[in-house]
Image (cartoon, rainbow, N blue to C red; front, side):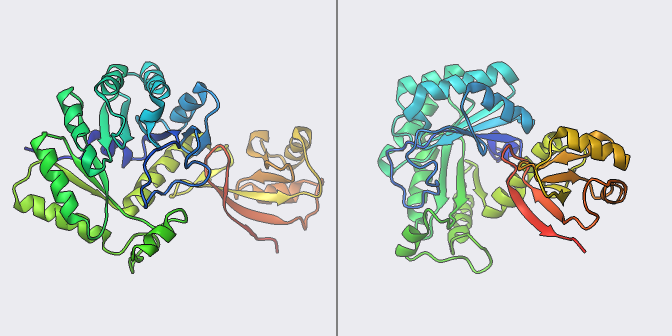
Length: 350
C-alpha cells in the first residue's frame, strides 16, 4: 500500500486551501487550544482572516487566493451543522466538485444523521479530534463511507495514548492520522507552563519534545508494519510553507500595479507622507505633473500618504510641485489581506 498524506494536506501545503472558521463555539476544553479571544466561544465566521458577514464573502475570499479547496474548522463546526452544510454546498456549487473540502470536529456531535448530511452536501474528508471515549465516531464515519481519520497534537508523554488511538483506527480501517507539533501561543501559554512544558531550544513557539513524540510514533508504526499513513505537520510547515503559499497566491491577486509581491507573499511599496488628507483628484494631479500613469499611484487607507513603486518614486519626488521635496518617505510591507495589516514600515527620508 502506498502511504500518502490526505488530499486535504497536499492542497494545504501549497497554500491553496481557504480556512473557513464557521464558529468559535465548542463544548470541549482542550488545554492547548490556540483560539484567540476574538474567536474562542464566540459564534463568529471567518474566511481566512476576513470576518464573514454574508455568504458572498466566503466565495470572494476563496477566489482571492485561487483556492483549490477549503478546510472547515472552529470551535466545532458540527455545533452549527446547518451553517456548515450550507457553506459546503455553496463552495461545491460555485467551484465544482474538484474543490476539495475537509472538516475538523471533536466528533462528540458526529451522529449517523449529521455525518450523512455532510456527506450528501459534498464533504470530501472528515478529521476527528476525539477524546478516548469518543473514538467510535471515526468507525461510524468509515461505516458510512466517508474518507476519515484523526488529527491530534503530538503531546510529549502522550505516545501511549496515541498508540492506542492508532490501534483502534487500524481496526476501523481509518484512512490517516495527522500529528501536529504542539505550540505555545498567548492563549495557551499559561496552561502549557502549568503542565511543565517548555519551548524547544531551536524554535520560537514549538513545545520541547513534541516533534520527538511524533517521530517516535511514526517509527513505532513502521516497525509494527502498520500501513495506515501517519503524517507529521511541524510548525515550520504551517508557517513557512502553508501560510507563505497562501499569501503568495493572494498577493498575486490583491497587488496594485505599483506594488511588488516579495518572496514571502508580502506587498512592498513606497509611501510619500502628506501634510493633509488627499483625494483622487489630488492623486491625478500629482500623476500628471510627475508624468506617471495614474494607476501607478495610490492613496493610503488613512488618506495621508501617496503610494507608488520604488522605481517610480524618483519621478514623483522630482516632477511634482504639490508637496515638499523634503517630504517624509517610508518603505512599507503589508499583508495582502483585506485589512492590509502592516508588517513593516520604516522611514528612509534623507
